[in-house]
Length: 250
Image (cartoon, rainbow, N blue to C red; front, top):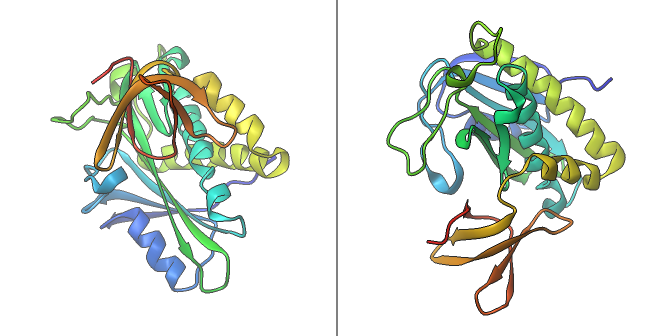
């Protein structure tokens, strides 16, 4: 059975990803889950703030790899599956889905996100900071799209959301299972499992890519996980990173 990485629980930090980066640049290799009860400067994708109130899960896996950067980036799909497994344990699994590439949804609203950062490790290879934020107790307000918290969608028989430490350990266990499959079997079975949970991969979609917004129809993903977007003029655009909104144009 896959062995979960140890969990380090901090009362507070600026950002678990930032803490992982500092440790990596100082020579630590992990694997180590860094978990904080509070974050003062959490970050999401594209530099957005990630609210750091107590009761939610803020966790980052610090690890190292010899994989090339493009291949190492596949870990984001591993993380999304692990988060989905975590939510499955407390919410009705029928409510849990993944939005490309790594947002995990509850009843169609965002409940969790993943932010992977990397850099050259002093000892060689790459350090990876696999950051995970999960809305356990409450969801942020005033977001562009509605957010959800696990507390709003508990399954019958589940009395309360898990505590931060318990949630972190369950996440670490689920991540270890998917990581072992990725390392032993390659990316294809991981991507197949991800596809089975993903919503909106075939239909209208709008992608915001830095200074450009493109619209079209999603046509699934490539073998390396890039989103295939068919534009109105017939061209096929491959999206490797960006904010994508499904089921709508504009």
